[in-house]
Image 1 (cartoon, rainbow over the protein chains, first blue to last red):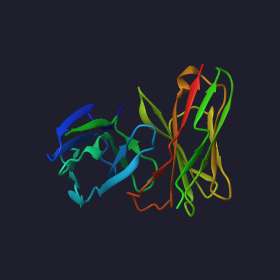
Image 2: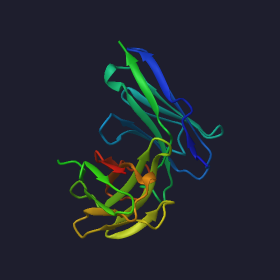
Image 3: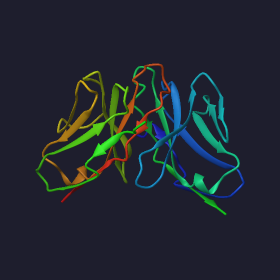
Length: 113
Length: 115
C-alpha cells in the first residue's frame, strides 16, 4: 500500500522552461509534505516543504502547491537549469513523527540545454 | 560545518552474516533516522533515535536493529543477512523537533551487497 505516489518515473524539460513534478497521497493524516532532490552517489537534499494547512509555499525558483481535496501536490521549478537534473522525491510526515518520512518512488528530471 | 558521515561506504557480505553500519550526525543534532533504498521499494523508513531512545519504528523485521550513543552517533545492525537486504542504507540527522516539516540532512549512504 503506497501512501505517496509519483506516477511519472521521468521528465525531460528544456533549459529555461518550467518543470512541474507531481505527487499524490492517500493518507489524510499527513501534516507536512516535503520535496528532496538526489544526485547519484549522494544522499537526498531537502528542497522545500509545505504544511497541510497551506496551499502554496515559495522559495526562490521553487514553488510547491498543495491541493488537499485532490490529495495532490506539485513542485514547480522556474526557470529550469541544467543543475536541476536529478531525482526528485516527494515525501510526507505527521507532526508526531516528523522524522518518519514516507517517500514516493521518485521522478528523474532531465534538463536539456 | 561537517555533514552527516556514514561508514563504510561500501560493504559486501554473504547470506547469514551480520553487519553493522555507522552514522555520525551533524554536530548539535540529536535525532538520527535510518532509511533503506532499493530499486523496487524506494526509500523506506527503518527507525529513528532521539537522545539514545528509539522514538519511531518502520515496518521491518526484528533482524534490523539500531542504537544511539550519548554523543548522538548511531549504529544500525542487520543480523542473518538475506539477499533482499542488498540496498543503500541512508542515515539522516536533524534537531529532532516535533513541529513538522523539519529538514533532514542525509549522509551519502552505505551500499550493502549480500551475496
